[in-house]
Picture (cartoon, rainbow, N blue to C red):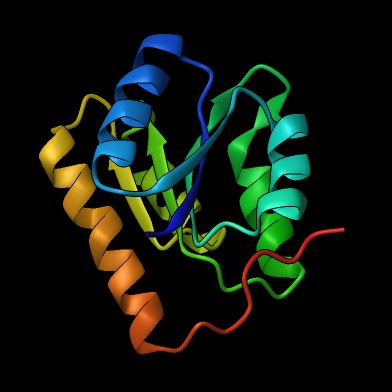
Length: 132
């Protein structure tokens, strides 16, 4: 079981991902904005972050950059409707480990989550979230 932080403001998508990830045996903490995501990172030390970019209180890449600047190695998978090559490159350059555009196939996203978690296990537990 992994602890997953979902940062997503779309209620329908959030509910779908919550059911799917919990169904895979993961502990999920769902935050609709950057403010609550920052709090959840400290409280729950997630093993992976699923991060939307267009959030009500800012751009999710801000959080990605903050985590990397703080030395966090937590896997970050961006989930966004921003699918241009420029947006994908910006996301990866900001420190995202993977970049998935909406709409996406749930089965593929779950496989990408498992791949990131597997990669994290191979490289050792290391540090979880570092923020604050």
